[in-house]
View 1 (spheres, rainbow, N blue to C red):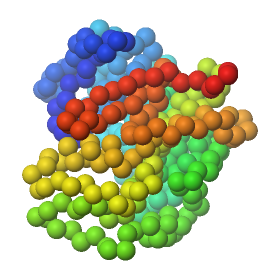
View 2: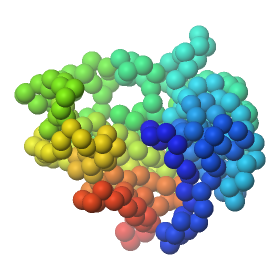
View 3: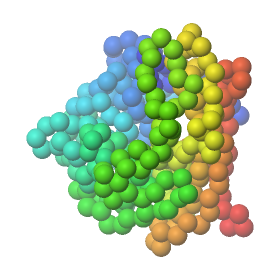
Length: 311
C-alpha cells in the first residue's frame, strides 16, 4: 500500500492466481495506489485508493460505481445499506479528533463520531476495526492500546475490554505512554545518519493491534504484533544499497511475532492465546493469514482456520 500502483490479486482457495481487479490510471475502475480494501455483502469489493478515491467492484471484478472520500482512510467497513464507516483524520471544526466517520455510497461525509485518543502527541488516532458491523455495533481498538470498545453508530461506548499482556501495559494517559517508551530505549541513543542504515532499532518496536474479528459463536478473535524478546540484539546487517521495501519486510519477519487471542466479550475473559512467529492477522471469514519472509526475499502467505481446542 506504500509503493505506488499494486494490483488487487484474487487467489483461489488453493492459492492459484485467478485474476486481478482494476488497473492503473485515473478513469472509472482505475487507481494509482490502494489505501484500504474491504469485502462487501455478496463478495463485492470496495476500494479506497489514490488518496481519496472510492470504487466498488462486482464479485467478478467489474466496475460498479465510484466516488470521492473527504479524507484519506486507514480502514473502511461496509454497511448493509450501502454506506461505509471509515477511520480517517479529518481536520474540520466538527470532526477534528474524532476517529470514525459515516459516509454515503459516493463517499460524502454524513457524520463523525468516536472516543478521543490517548495518544494526542500523534494527532487523531488510527484505529483497528472489526471488518463488519453486527446489529449496528462495531468493535474497535486503538492500534497501540489493547482496549477493545463496542461502539454504536453515534460513538457511544457500551462495553470496554482491557486485556493484559506480558508485552504491553494498559495505559491511562499520554504521559504514561511516553514514560514507558522512554524507559525502553537502548542505552546508546540512535543518531540519524543519512549515509548508512542503523544496525539496530532506536527504541522498542511498536505494539500494534492488527485485527479484531467477532465469530458466529460471539467470541472475539484479536491478532496483534509484538516484538521478539531479543529485539535489542538483532543486527539487521544490510548495507546502504538495500531497498526500503526489502528492509521493511525483513524487519517485520525478524523483529515481530503475532499473538492471537480468543476473548469472551461478555466477561472480558481471555479464553486462549497463541504466539506465532512473524506477521499475521485475522481475515473476514475466520481464517488466520500469516506472512512468511524467506531468506531469498520471497514472501509467502499461509492461510489457516482457527478454533478453540475441544470446542
